[in-house]
Length: 287
Image 1: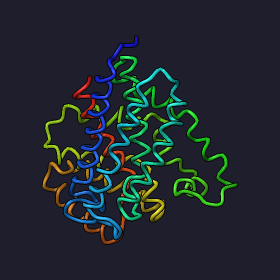
Image 2: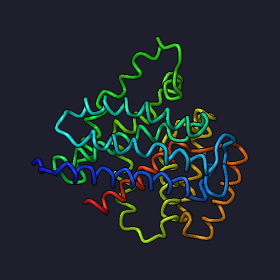
Image 3: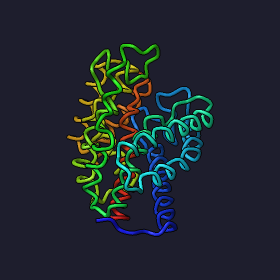
Image 4: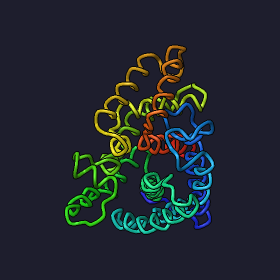
């Protein structure tokens, strides 16, 4: 059932959502140890960006999340909403590259957050429960894999398109087409009532994601065997208790050093960590 909202209340909600998105991005890059990702302590496996690059990018792109949120608060069908936020996303990417002097800090995350934040506001428009957000995400991107149908005829391919041609990986598009099921069905259920300190919780979520996600960033920068090794490392670490045990912390230190030295960075999992943090906070505050 549609709940009638005032314009000022809509603006306020969308502003709140964009600030929670901003917080999620900052919490993600502030997570450490982070297995070769950029953190406050290290640039990890990256030579072209550091912690402050991420902060600069985050503050520049946050206003676009509010635009996307407002776009979703409507009766318009979800596929049309998706086409509108794609255009906003392109503007947002350009602002990111301007802020980072060409470094790709958040391209994948702009796409993910755009879909999530508009699905949330569309869900709020119809006054549905939190679980329905996943259905809206699926409906919004129902044709997302159609992007791959024309890759053979393109002159320039994105990283994701190159991996699809080479390995058949659908990457971030596949995750979204599944309604971000790993987050809704696994991460949120495991961690919404968790009593770990926030930083440690976020490290644990990152490990969970690394154990399960076929991270296209790892494959693009390296190869499939390296991805499989990352997944095995994360599964082994979870069995040790992760960051909650001394054995786990010792193993984390070894992995962190190894990944930085070998330029291994699970960028796709980092994006999903930010979305996990975002959705956990949204569920707590709004549902």
